[in-house]
Image (cartoon, rainbow, N blue to C red; front, side, top):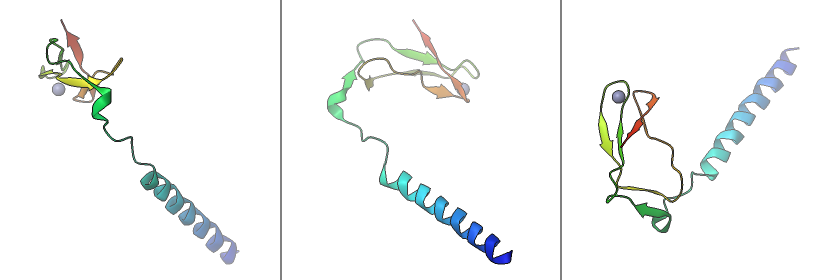
Length: 79
Ligand SMILES: [Zn+2]
């Protein structure tokens, strides 16, 4: 029984290492400058619904982009 538990633990650790290596081997896509659009002319302002912090977006990926998060909540787009 001890050997079976030992093998099980070994397999679990091996699985964890493989999962970790997979994450390291597939880093998130690098920022591609060509895919970013300059929105500094538009007043894209987001404010935090919790603490009121306000930010202005200057550049974003083309297309729809999720609102940034602050205080663990999605920020609100101000117009
Ligand atoms: Zn906040």
